[in-house]
Image (cartoon, rainbow, N blue to C red; front, side, top):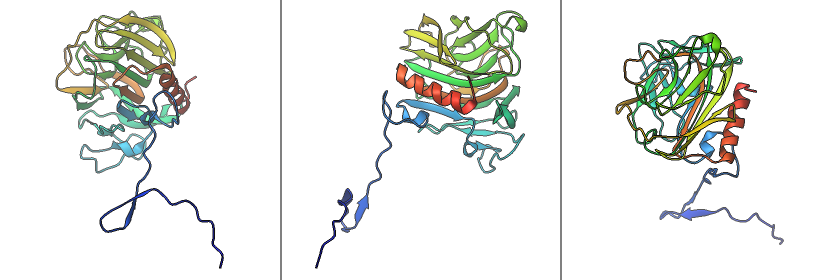
Length: 280
């Protein structure tokens, strides 16, 4: 009789029944190194709105009718972080457009369209370090108070918006990042061109840095203003106040982390988003 060389036994634990229960290995988390496939591989993800994943979009707020085709209303858009926040709107939702961003289908916000989500301590704006990135493509550039709003947690405070300081033809764009007194003014935004906007903050009253398409732009020190809406967060409009701030364009991806990410993780996100949306 001969014996075969069997593979080593798989790791398992025994229940009282004596039957083996095999444990699925945990997905590795990225802390500046290791495997990377998407934003969930970086620790601290608080929000990921994925504009390419139809499984996260619904034609009704009850999430029973899936978004499947061109012009379908997106009345529910589900966050892909572990928080699984729902962003909902029954009357003025964005629509799913196949034409999208660089030919890739994406949610389209046409001025009056928006989605409303939760106010949560998980969505850290005015109280600590953070990293934000958003893929957007504006139809038109907006003037002063009539701005393109990407994501907001306040009426005039703590929103990520894009607007022109003069006439749209000047293309002197400012990006207001979560502090109503500071703007990024070095980049010229062009309509109907996709961009990857980014913002990092070291602390509530710490160093802030703007990025566009992975390139560092203006930096400043946050004043520590924590005047934010205490009820909701929104995509495509401000959450409060009298300013006429909405969104006119496509929104591809939005991510928010509860820390100031390091260079390695920022580069991973930039490479990921630019590749999937064809941003050069």
